[in-house]
Length: 364
Ligand SMILES: NC(=O)c1ccc[n+]([C@@H]2O[C@H](COP(=O)([O-])OP(=O)(O)OC[C@H]3O[C@@H](n4cnc5c(N)ncnc54)[C@H](O)[C@@H]3O)[C@@H](O)[C@H]2O)c1
Image (cartoon, rainbow, N blue to C red; front, side):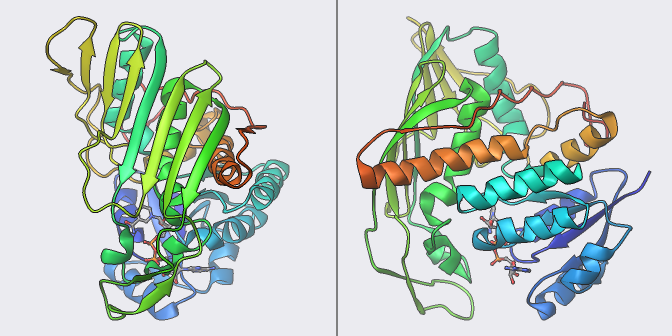
């Protein structure tokens, strides 16, 4: 069976998706669209497909699922159009920049019986899957707490159209926070409540790459965000995300259990290292990874969605998980304004771990 795929939004990240679509045995990139027609045309020529209008893509009966790789501020509206056209959507993160438009999208998809998937899918990678096995096998006992850090100087240094990172729906929390929060929910389960503190550290930033290098852009969202997360399990995690930091030696993420500590790899990647140090051990042990997906496997979440649609099972990087993560992020920023904890209304189960054997084509 051929699985026809479309892409809307042919910017920087679209290339790795086009490359990885070739790893899904039945998938074919049928057409691409972008509000910048010239960009879509150049992309189509690179990847041997057709550039069409947005409407033509949505009406194409050969397309079963669409990758929405537009900017965060457009995600909800574009995903909704895809769902209204009766197609599955797999969107880049975040799911939306506000809760209402995310709710409308998920309700509409449920009514039309199409699936919503959302990045990140890095939790399907070898590193985070190994971490999950470490926890489930009891290597560090009961997880009590954790720390997680994403401290960088922001994408204005390298992204040629960096302004979306500094609009609501961008910033370090909405841009990179989804990797951390999704990984944490995959490892520890749902979040009960969040507390946040946030600041905008500079009113403008300067684009550092591409034809607009040197152009000053306005900052409309916090660039340093510190948060406490209380999980339904009782685990307490401190998360700090920043676009204001020139250098840091903090770990990506650590989980502290009753019997030891788990050092989690960068949740914005698919690989390791995964390290464990159990109670009273003097050294860290670096563990072998449970499966081979260590390279940039962006699109694995779509492969799982397609397989799940055929098999009639839930897919892992789904809309409910992305909504829970979105609610946590919205709650952290709300809390930074009110000074109060934000208790989450949404609830999710931990996504099922991946088996060891399957390939991109036969995920179960
Ligand atoms: N660049 C990265 O390294 C990276 C990594 C991981 C995830 N992402 C995510 O991928 C998404 C896209 O990022 P990017 O870096 O590729 O951005 P980009 O600006 O390079 O590309 C986005 C594209 O979407 C198009 N677009 C925007 N609104 C549209 C609309 N309403 N209809 C049709 N086309 C529209 C733009 O014209 C542009 O070509 C973002 O959500 C980002 O968070 C990016």
